[in-house]
Length: 151
Image (cartoon, rainbow, N blue to C red):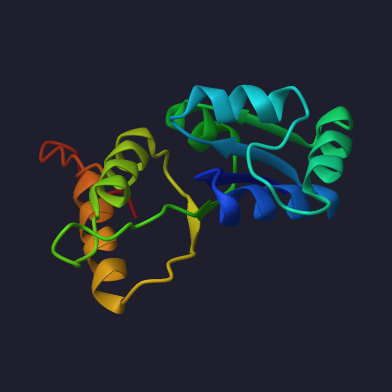
């Protein structure tokens, strides 16, 4: 299966490497070009026992690569994992700007059908907020009133 992983932090990197090791073609997506370059060179952007070897192995097999382009990832994959961090804001609430940014980018890049797996560690409110942002990005159907419905 062609899978994209949005966010190449701890959850995203480990998920990407493990899914690639299971035989899937995985495309990691992150706005940090240093992380993207490291993965594309077969190196790990995070410290996790065993991960550098796994990333190198899967990158050499051609099953793991990374990009900064959300549009490329959406066009090239059938399923996306959203692994975006939600750090605490100074007042203790969730800082959702990264989640909102990814929702906007995915919405703008969507093709007709896409499946997502939500990997959020935060409260239900954040998932609902993300879905609202995501749904706002969906294209509105165009209706041509001059066309007749064919039976």
